[in-house]
Amino acid sequence: MRSLEIAAGKAGVEILLEHRMTRIYRQAPNSGSVLGIAVEHKGAEVKIRARQAVIIGTGGSTGNVNFRRMFDPRLTEEYCGLAGMPWSDQDASGELAAMAIGASLWGFYNQTGEFGSNVTKPGSVGCPYNYRHLQWMPGSPVFDRARATGLRVANWQDLILVNMLGKRFYDETGGQYIANNYNSLDPYVQGSWLNAKNLKWNPNNFLNAALAGIDDGNNGGGPVWAIFDADAVAREEWTPTPPYVDIAAGFFFSANRLADLAEKIVMKYQRVAMPSANLEETVARYSSFVDSGVDEDFGKPTPMYKIARPPFYAAWATPVVHDTRAGLRINAKCQVIDINGEVIPGLYCGGESAGGFSQHGLARATCQGYIAGTGAAGTPPLPGTL
Image (cartoon, rainbow, N blue to C red; front, side, top):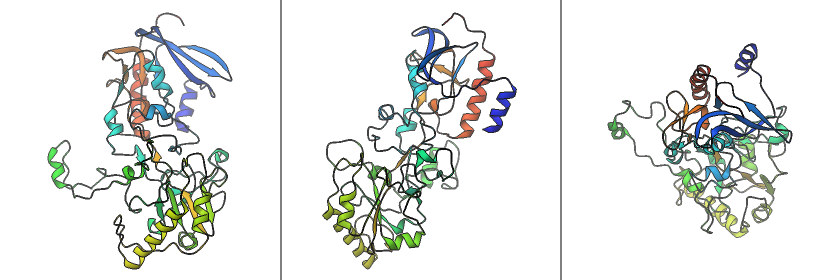
């Protein structure tokens, strides 16, 4: 990214920091070319006239709770540890501004099909920002916002996961979702429906179980807590104190008794109190599975460790909202398409604000950015004034 920034600077590109785009202007609300944008800068609105085009590259929509719930009503406020946060919040600003001038959304199934990294199992516990491929460390420019690194889980046998009511809901060692990963199908023929015949039946429903809720009439699964003891801390070589865990904001608790631990779990996303008796019963039942070697509830392979030696811990282990794969409808030239299937002249889009793609990450953003930039550079000067 720094190389691109340097190249842009050499090309005379002006980068405006702390400018939030709030509106896209068009000749008429739902017709004609785009004209430019409005931005908010330190409380003041600034209008920026576009010479040839506007390119939307604002990221996705995972940080906008109401927007993401159009695709999955379960993704309520408690799914707060977005991948990339607290540095980048995908707020759907580009999508909303384009929709206001007639743009269409696209790729809903890519977001709702429950495959790929739309929602992921956490990689760390005890902090809100627990995406498994990113860990904020002390010394980072944004560590004051991240507040904790989290405790990276090496072995899911070292803990159990419970919902708001203190009850287990799935095998903790279960993978996050089923995906067509490299070599998971052999042979694999691109586009062939016969690929399904080579699937090995191995159902995995971890994420749906985590998001299932507690049958209290509310959407959203609520917080998921990792419960473990002092022996687990020793095995994992964890340090269960700040800056490794976020105690101040209520993402980590400890106590010498399980009953006291349940009572301590009070934070803004825990909408009901965890019954102490539930947590004690859950841990006792799990310990009996360690004795027998069989998880009678969820089939965890040979449960290995009891939760018995104080202090006991409860660490935030709620799934992470990650990729946005639904966004603005674009064509092969990355031009934005309106609700009638027509091109909006002078408006382009790429990256996670564009819908209809299963690919994610820098490869997608770079390719679509190149296509959109090339198209924008060849667009005739835009007519009219703001």
